[in-house]
Image: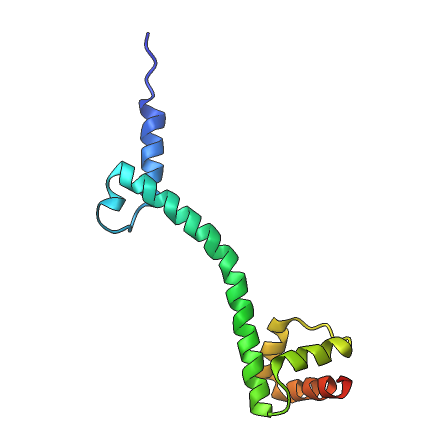
Amino acid sequence: MRVTYSVPRHKRKKKILKRAKGFYGDKSRRLRMATQQVDKALKASYTGRKDKKSEYRALWITRINGALSAEKTLNYSKFINGLKKAEITLNRKMISEMAIKDPASFKQLVEIAKKSL
């Protein structure tokens, strides 16, 4: 009796075509094209998850710098340096949230950073 691989093969094809759903043109219908495109998409999503972290950090830094330029006292690098010298360990996300939602406490942080320089 011979062994056939029809069931696992069909499952494998279905899994790839399910992941390729919504891709443009034949990339969602033909197995070879779908396989290539799914591999490419998985690689891109992996690198995208890594890139997202640095993009958010850049956004927070931009927000902080914008809030500091509205204050017209310090620039970003001097502000961060002042916070380090004052031994204040707040991450950039929290500082940017403070700059947006609580400007009064952000002004206090700016004053502390200015004094420590």
